[in-house]
Amino acid sequence: MNFFELNNGIKIPCIGLGTFLLSPEDAENSTREALKLGYLLIDTANAYVNERAIGRAIKASGIKRENIFISTKLWPNEYENENAVNETLERLNLNYIDLLFLHQPAGNYIAGYKQLEKAYKEGKIKSIGISNFEGKYIEEILSNSEITPQVIQVEAHPYFVQEELRKIIEPKNIKLMSWYPLGHGDISLLSEPIFKIIGNKYNKSSIQIIQMGFIVIPGSKNVEHIKENFNIFDFELTEEDMNLIANINKNERYYTRTEEQLARFSTYIPQYEQN
Image 1: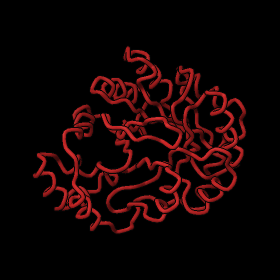
Image 2: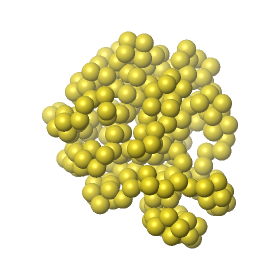
Image 3: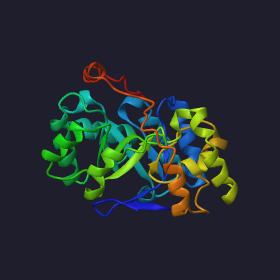
Image 4: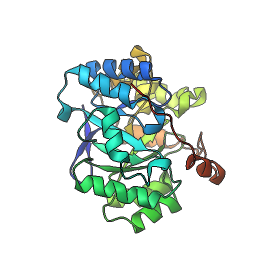
């Protein structure tokens, strides 16, 4: 397992299991199988409605708590709820969270960030994250924060490498965690000839080549896919490989958020899993 060191000295695995769109049953099974395969990072969120299921899988794994890195996210309706962190801990059945994000730049996110800073000082969370805070939103967080965030989670993949955002975060050693690392399954990305060429050199699949670079959290309920995604620790891309991959950057996203959508995020209330 390879790790990145965050700006507070905490080490985070370079690859984890994403659980977006996984039902509680599928999330519990995928987490259980991923941990058996050697995954140490599991990513979830209040809004995914599967935190309790993931907590069950962690408890059943028999792995020491300190050896598993758990990241989750507060939804905007929780930013002003002073009990939100404790309630998240209760759902996960944990006594601390390794990385807690603000999920969206909606609602009173400055109050939300202050809540994360408080939880960080109290030891309830070990690292602070912001998810989907780009442009003016990350600038506002950085201008109003006492503690610099350790991780930002955003869409990033070879067609969209987040050049502008990286100019802001890299000097502050804020690590980038990628969602949609495989381009949301886009066949045109997965079929790019350069990945096959490089993959043949290392006897790896295109998917395994694409994942190299940022912290990535590919999600799946297919155990074979979970296994394939994780099989990336026996080779390393050269600078020449990376330069060839960089040439396919299109600066194109698969998903965009409008101000109207952000406004809706602040009023949506997730129906948390009850058991």
